[in-house]
Length: 196
Image (tube, rainbow, N blue to C red; front, side, top):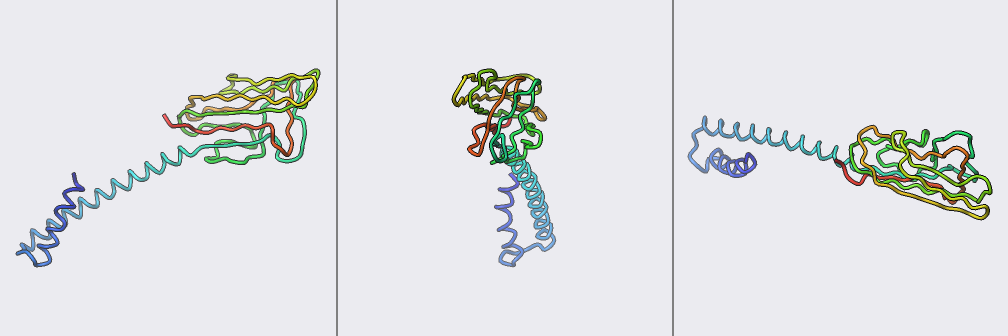
């Protein structure tokens, strides 16, 4: 390989050109220039390889976790139409693939991702605590709880294969509701497991 040639030729050339071995000045200069060209090409190749590894490594660092309310306490819903839940209290957003202004996670790389969503309600005789995880407009998994009184907490999770640009979010179905407060019971999290 060029690396091995450089490692074996360079000490010999240094001995020849330093006068410790009878030199042929023109051959010595040509040999050194050849080795230096090989070294430059090898280093340029290494630089490109390091840049690719850095990009791959950065792409693999994707994780987010967010709670529904930035602060305070309150109910979200019920509404008469389906509504995207926007989780505004972001604790982690490595890679910035989750948007706390829209509630959408947009996959920046093709890979396998894991998502979890947890919802909480105080109990209602008429509306359930209910949420669904959606990928590109298609419902994937749901979490549902309906108790007439007391607290109710429910959760779900899923591992999904996503392509670049695929969108994942949590939707509040019509006529359902959730609650959140300073303890951050209602959350949405996800992370990249590996690229494909």
